[in-house]
Length: 353
Image (cartoon, rainbow, N blue to C red):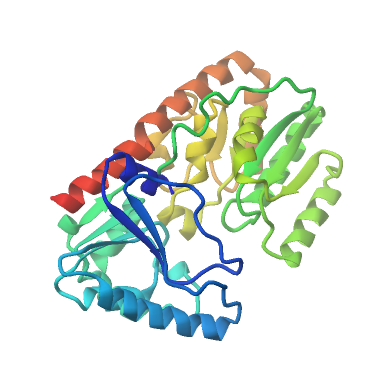
């Protein structure tokens, strides 16, 4: 949506096509000048997985066939089948965006061999990290066709959002509640240390828990650490409510572990964290150190070390004035490096070039 907003503001005629629906048949409610939304699926969504896959195959073929000669396609979706169909047409310009290591995709019908063959034929690739750039070069994509496009956020999202006066103080994390991707278990362990020094501060864990097994693990951990009254799992928060919840937090935290996902990806939530102007405590993984400096624009700890992470959290709570200054510098990083306007313009320049 941030890309779409950027294309719209740059007056780039854009057609956004959805080949299949989600299980609710959702459609985009916002209106953007110069942007059309096209839904190739029927009026009612198909919830049967097999039929949905058949529909996807049919619509992918139809979409590829209907594209006019010379069209430029921006594919922000890792579909090996659709990509192979698109690059099969030599008269198209096909650009692809990737934000994760392809091997991490566990989707059925994702053919990694077909994918790796197709990416060599792309007009250009937009990648989110230097590690992904190295990966694509190693798999046959010419370096001149690879472009780093930073994670982007809508910098207007936090305009006029002021911190509300509240008696409840809390540290917040938002995202999918897992240990493997974002180290929520390390965050809880670090908070247990912080809680001893700052018992009035809560921990809000915002977002969906993937399954009952994961939920049971976290609930058990919280209980064993004696944090039942201090850690709150909020579940999914509506999109329009999120800015205020993040803004009200004392600290925004992200204890990503040092693993392959962190190495090749980049936490898209980080942009919104920084835009709040609140101090951000996170770990030194992937390309994060390329943008943020410990003690200057964020507080950065060694990954997989709850004790060190707790030290950073305690420092932010103990030194409020210094933390506020650090948060303001972090916001400047987001506005300068993760701005949807500048990154979208970068894409437009590459496509037009």
